View 1 (cartoon, rainbow, N blue to C red):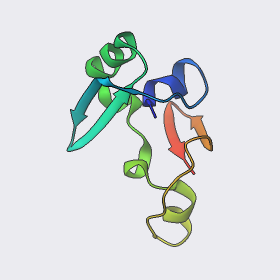
View 2 (cartoon, one colour):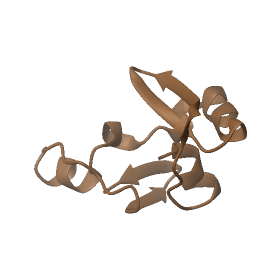
View 3 (cartoon, rainbow, N blue to C red):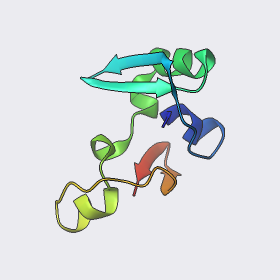
View 4 (cartoon, one colour):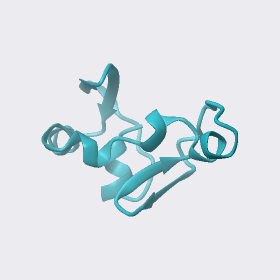
Length: 82
């Protein structure tokens, strides 16, 4: 999923390999070149909290659990995936 879309479209959007960018050893895919450009300019703004692991599980038990990209919350300018 493209992390920028959570902020700009308030939904999970599948990214394209043609619009890929690696940041902190994680390869992100973006739905558009415009979203890729936004991420490149300010990756820390769009990067998911907790490394993209389930925020609830990490907070409750410290366990790294896969997320459902459709289950998320943007709050305080931060992206949390569940």
